[in-house]
Length: 443
Image (cartoon, rainbow, N blue to C red; front, side, top):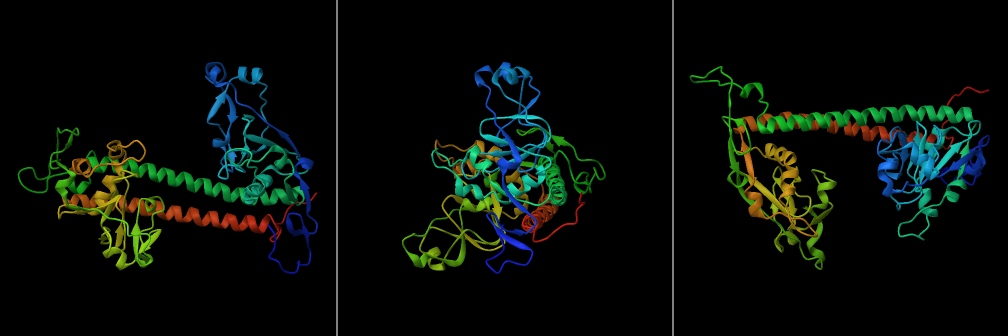
């Protein structure tokens, strides 16, 4: 919140919340807000207190650090009257007090009157003192503040309503707060639209993938016969164990289109010479933070040759047989893999990108084949035996191209979303500290 430790610029002053413009004030929230709480209606009276309810009842999982419309659960009028719950007014800012460092300090601004549970505190800005959206933005910007005050009296660190009441905030005039809030709200609206667009594109891709990979929809160039007696006629379907499939597709087991399944291993952790920055060494952990050019850890050539790990060429599909079942990745560089992974080297009649999208579409099906009480795994024999719908390689490549183009479009939107978030972060740093001032209407 503060300037770097340099001489305080002209027109600014040092305060408890950092360096801010001279005309700004600092106040604890209890001086400029009202507060409220909530509770959970007894679950034992679920039919009476929840079924058919039409009143918002907000809990931590509803908090999105932004505007909140409908809550996940609704409660009845009876619940309000019999439990003492009160609905907080529109414009109330909610703060999470419990749930560990990943939850405390999460916020939401309600857009309809809502009751809350006991894990939240309701902060009600006084209109002539504090703009609700300005408060929401300020709390989001300084969310890490709560880590310093969190109590360890419970299993998970938490904060109290008194901690929130004593939170100090930099206060420009309400008019300037409103100008700041409007600017940040505009960026939030753009972020929301981008998130909706990405979700829509992902849904379209999922539906397209389902249609193309099962042959329920054929690309025009493969939908009709191009030679022989049936030239120009549409291709039909045939019954199979997987339902109706294109008559020119085959059902095979996965092993029949894979030349070899190659596993990996872990070099000894006790030998420093085995670990270095020569070869990316891939584990299941890399699937969730996937980058096609690097892994979280790397090994040396010496580590590769003195372990069960294997070097996997770029462009080869890698999947997991232990944890994250059904997930698959393709690297754009050569990598080594550990013992929980398998590299699938396809035969000449298989397009590796088509196989990648097949794994994406069948992830749940593969996961269902897994077993294990603590860590779920799938045997190589079960993986090899999975039924696989096989079009011609040309059609595989055409399908993979369509889906890859969709992925690229989604990736471009995600990059734009990430950039917009960075822009917002920079705006918050400038506007909420007074480093950059906006024009505003003065009374």
